[in-house]
Amino acid sequence: MDIFVDTGIVIGYADSEDLNFHQPCFRFVNNHRFRDNGYYSNLEVITTEVSRKESQRCYVKTKTAFRRFVQRAKIFIDHLVDASYEQHNQFGLMFQNIHSTLIRYGTPNHPMDRDAKLLTSSFLWELEAQNLISPCFLTTDYHDIYKNRAKLTETANLYLPRNSRLNIEFINSID
Image (cartoon, rainbow, N blue to C red):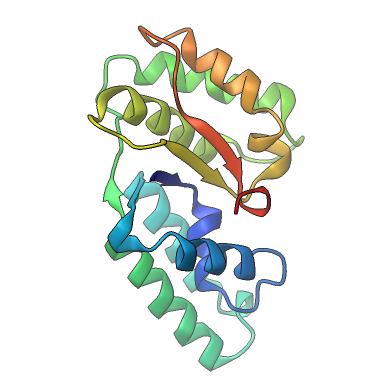
């Protein structure tokens, strides 16, 4: 399986104190090992978000949990292949329209630029990468991304030469 992950998957995997997403993310990675599957993302977005969480020491309650968070996040990031397509000729227009779709249908007052960047990169990755096996965008964001996956795919397809095969999945509904 080829899996494009959003930031919530990496953070959920790394943060053992996350009651909602640590277990599903950890279980998913254990069932879909790094060595047997392709893991991709926009590394700039991922590393920025993980660094932001690391700098919020109050985010993790104990020193041990903080160290574990940093170690697990680094392990996950080390296994990610960078799939940022910001130089692609369709990136700008697709990003703007995916961003607009997220704003229109997503959670009010929630920043959507990182999600739009990840989604745009994932649709272009599915288009440009060769020999992907069951390409999947995996998210922890039910309300903004998963619930609106049909609208987001429809928007992306306006800029692609063929319909995308990318399957958008919510971590709690897979495996």
